[in-house]
Amino acid sequence: MCKILRLAVFILLIIMLAQAQNSPVNFREAMFYRKLDNKKVVCELCPRSCVISSGKRGFCRNRENVDGKLYSVVYNRPVSIGIEPIEKAPFYHFMPGAMRLTLATVGCNQHCKYCQNWEISQRSVEEVENYYLSPEDIIKLAQEKKVKIICFTYTEPIVFYEYMYDIAKLARKEGLKSVVVTGGYINPKPLHELTKVVDAIKIDLKGFNEKFYNEVCNSELAPVLEAIKIVKQSNVHLEIVNLVVPTLNDDTNEIKAMCLWIKENIGSEVPIHFSRFFPQYKLQKLPPTPITTLERSAQIAKQVGLKYVYLGNVFGHELENTYCPQCHKLLIKRQGYSILENNILKGQCKFCGEKIYGVF
Image (cartoon, rainbow, N blue to C red):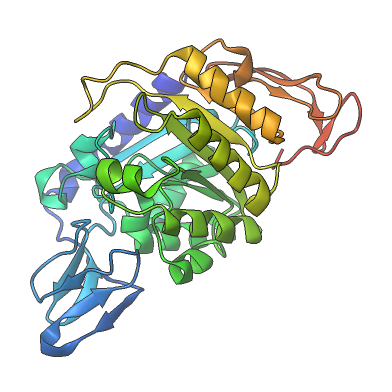
């Protein structure tokens, strides 16, 4: 059903795509930057703090200095759009079973060697075919398809911040939810502003040491940890994913240190998903993550005291399911991205009344 719906959306938008090729790029002035001398600017959206000369773009390729002002060049220009289950994000504790309208532009402010969407995350807007859809168009499309969640995903939503922000503001006015799938590589001020307009954020905590972030992701760990704390302190629902990559971030001590940090800094209730790596992009010589490695990571998380621990990309495993942390009975039974059984009533375990973290 999901594939049929997604195909229908693509067919519906094919005319818009054709029109987009003849439409001017709709620049939108960036929300977070500072002017420097000689018409240079410094982007203040993410920790890279790119200093950009007039006529040039920053690391993410999406923000251009035009005569001393910084603009987003991907505003209104999504490269991918579709309809998928919320569980694929993955969000397991935010409106389980709901469908989401997925949306992405090109670009990213990291450069992960295992990126599964590198064909669009490592491209510029001129290098791909784009749709031409305003924030109002996105809201209308979600309403027409009776989808209650708009999900910014696939690449890095931070680098199309203004587009995401404006869509999320409109969505809230129309009673729709907005969720973000991100690497969390963002400065505190724009993140604080984002948490005022979106409803859920899933952060990829890619590893737990600076060397891994530097060498594999071309970024830094510390800003991501700060972002996780900021989201948890807001009213926004939070989930965390750790993609376990063989030989690179699968050390037992490192996994334990990460789980302890999570418990001590954001509590034991935030769901954590240990996802299976498959060879991608520049890491094609590594093997897929052994399931035993994922199970070991999950066991460490549980021993530390984390309440909601999942395995991702392992269809049919019992740790796809949600269990009550109090009575340990099955609450949500999943098969892939489908919900087969749901025993959460009004945010509580049907069997013992334990309050379950999330939005249900």
